[in-house]
Image 1 (cartoon, one colour):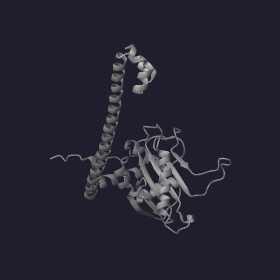
Image 2 (cartoon, one colour):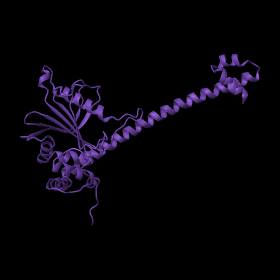
Image 3 (tube, helix red, strand yellow):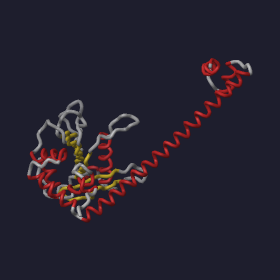
Image 4 (cartoon, one colour):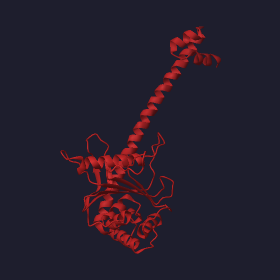
Amino acid sequence: MKKQMSNLDKLTLSNDFLFKQVMLRKRICKHILEELLHTEIADITYLEAEQTIDVYPDSHGIRLDVRIADAANTHYNLEMQVKNPVNRATGKFLLPKRTRYYQAMLDTDMLQKGQDYDELSPTYIIFFCLFDFFQDSQRIYTFKKRCLENMNIELADEAVIMFLNTLGTKGDVSPDIQSLFDYINSNTINSNFTREVADTIVEIKNDKKVRDAYMTYEMRMKDLRDEAHAEGKAEGLAEGKAEGLAEGKAEEKTATAKRLLSMGLSVEDIAKATSLSVEQVEAIKAE
């Protein structure tokens, strides 16, 4: 009997869950960081994968895909970003301020009570983006704080934000990073490194513990979607009820104005009695 393909079998590296599982393979994750930052890293430690940070009970928590520290106590947060999120109400893109919030929450979580500010570790927040947020075709966009009056002056807060544009064509990256971009974009295997990544994914998908974990992950995501749908439905019902009440009051005022007009009252008096404008009463009279 042919084995039925599960949702896990269909996942590619751009999926959050699978990306996290691959980044948990130390050799792969360490190699990516070394290739991106052009430095050797002695070792890495996983602080916690897919960690949720809630610094304050009423604060907006953040879920981190992969959080790592190296032997020099530099901290890394790696995120996969498939879509470019936007606030539908304002039309503003959310990614820049998301990085600002991630940085603030990481620092607050990192600095324990009584510690000095200089004990904050250097940090890298790295987004793998399947779109070009800045529309400049750069393969990598690296951000540090600099003085606008003199761009040679850097604020040495040791906080770095990196956006990796898998579709980029400008700027130099190592062959392994470019092959990783190609693999993320189209599952193309064109290097020994992406062959290792692909083989690792096959191994991950055949791991029973991972398959069980993905079933739990799917159920949790479904619960979150259901909750969001229920909240949206409740908001819609509330808005519909409010709109219905408003329409009902407007119809009631119109009916009252018509009755008063039939009784011969002046437009001005009817406007005062119904809280309608003179123009609105004139329009009702003209009907």
